[in-house]
Amino acid sequence: MKRKLLMLASAAALPLFATPAYADHHAEAPAAEAEMTEDQRLRALFAASDEDNLRRNPIMALFRGDMRYADRIGDFISDEYFDGERAAAEANLAALAEIDRSALSQTNQIAYDIFRLQQEENLRDVSPELMALTVVRPVNHFSGFHTFYPTFASGQGAAPFNTVEDYENNLSRHQDFITISDRSIERFRQGMESGVFESQLTIGRVVEQLDTQLAEEIADSPYFRPALNFPEGFSEEDQARLTNAYRESTQAIFDAYTRMRDFLRDEYLPVAREGVGLVHMRGGDVVYAQMVRDTTTLDLTPDFIHDLGLAEVARITRGFEEIRDEVGFEGTLQEFFEHIRTDPQFKPESREWLAEEYYRIGERVDQRISELFSTIPNSPLEIRAVEPFREATAAGGSYQPGTPDGSRPGVFYYNAYNLDERLTPGMETLYLHEAAPGHHFQISLAQENADLPNFMRFGGNTAYVEGWALYTETLGPELGIFTDPYQRFGHLNDEMLRAMRLVVDTGLHAKGWTREQAIQYMLDNSGMTNVEATSEVERYIAIPSQALAYKIGSLTIQALRAQAEEALGDNFDIRGFHEQVLDTGALPMAVLEDKIYDWIEANGGTRPGGIDLMAVHDYEVAGD
Image (tube, rainbow, N blue to C red; front, side, top):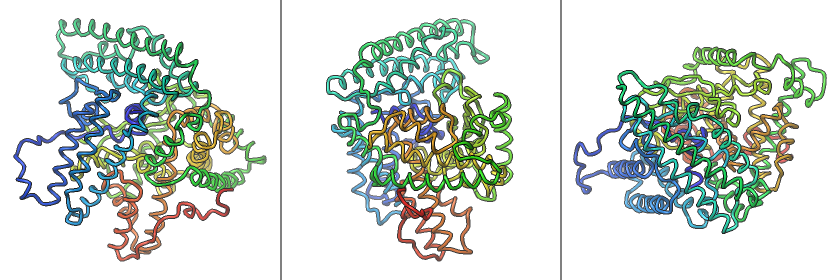
């Protein structure tokens, strides 16, 4: 399923990749069902469902540090796999219906609601109607194992390379990867027969990505890299045997890449659709509506989201104008944007300088973080540059979770590709979002909370995960940063990016905008460079609706905070609010709303009556 492959390929879905040491579920025989409380029955269902899910999706276990299935990636693309996912969701919903929700603890009532919503979403995603429109488009330049797997298998990703068995497990996983690659060709052919096509743009980018990897010598490939870095203690015999095996397996992967590249270039690309948005694809309106629902966790129409984006763009534009006047720039807003795009003072000095500056930002945040948060993650945080083989198409920043026990740190990746097109304003904002207190706090605190069921510790939804990270960008003044007006400009520029996403994503996929129209809109309304705007637009083309979740989630959290501050007055505790938002993992927006309202009531406040996203910033003109 395309959503599953995206989860594995994109850093935006990374919350599913983390993990605890596993308890032995069979160490003690469970109590007879008749003697179990409803809470116990619910947790038993969660444990059984999670264990079954790891068997069906073994790579998720590996990301958690569970090595029981470490010799497999999984299936993800066959009919049998989807049948298994459908059967699991149906069985989980049937078992859930036998549990009395009213008899559960407050936390377990939240867990019950989330589990039900997730299983219902899973069923919708594997319905024959949606699968006919999604499974036949298994790869694009943002969604596919060809972008995820090189780092994963290189020794620089989540897979361990400490023992001979680790090395042999990786060789075994290569076979799954090759199978998935070849099956993807079969799925594309099914789409060609049914008239459901990926776009020429996205497939062209995939061909470029494959060409780049195939241009490498085997000895320079990420797949061969583990054979260049054997741990101490490996015998000469094992090193020689594994070196030869890794050379052969890398060649086999190159052969699979060649088959995929040749098929896409010679057969698929000539017949792929020209229109970049889903509005140009048969059944695209159905797919987009479901994707909007999945990513925002709310029932919102593309038209409403488009108008909300226009209102946010207008508000943020006024903020740009205020900063332009503050720094004394004499010229139009467009000239101010161009000044920041082109003036050398706003370019990174070097890759080394970029790394050092992110370390300095992190130290400043660390000095004040306890003022806003009562719980700090145990998992360490590392700062790394994006690897050269993927930096040309990677986002400006991303986050890879560590393990709950801290044996693998969380990693904030920054992109140092083409420094002449990178801007220093916004570095503080990027750190807040991707590192602390953004993704690193939210993901780490959830997976370190052993009191939560695993699907809440390691699962999530984009509206919450990205909404939280975007919300944390607004905490800059409270954390003692954004003291420089140009960093405040960068903050507004990033906020504008998320607002423009509401306009551009819906424009592309519901209103028929062209790629060029979308790029120009972003250049006209922000200080983004052409490289940045192009990369963003091509991302929205590849993964429709994902970009909507940031602003929707952030506005929801901002609204809940404002309502809590108003309802509780002097009794409002920002550390307590953040604890409530974070301590039960990534919640659907409606579930988070109910939880915060319960907290307000428990602290003596009047329960609010709901959220109007259009009223969060009290827009002067909505939809202008």
